[in-house]
Image 1 (cartoon, rainbow, N blue to C red):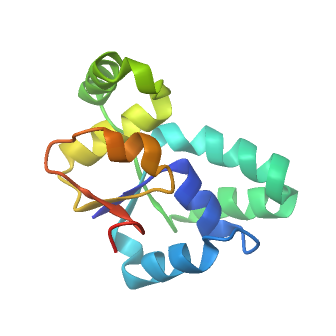
Image 2: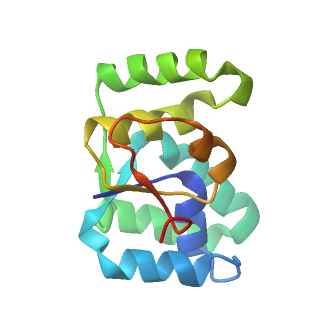
Image 3: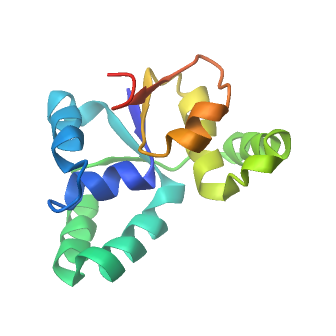
Length: 137
């Protein structure tokens, strides 16, 4: 299982992104293994609309509605763990979204996190030590 963060999903969708080919290769290798935490959805929606275009944003919403992506809606434990990570790694300024991605990856025992944010994700020691893709190939 691969838990995806916002940047990974944007790169997957945006053909002009310099990481697009790498993300498509990761996704195509195991599309049913990708999990999108609920917390990334508003960010992806907003950033697609603002930076990629309305057509891409509508396609993403359509794909979500059709079940093309597995969305993980989480639970209260994810929010508690996100708060703990934000406190422990306060100097990083993780924020809710990244911390929820990390919490979900820990709880689901994901083998990897799809992320381009290696500064934050690489600095946090997560239970299960999920790999960071594509960095850890």
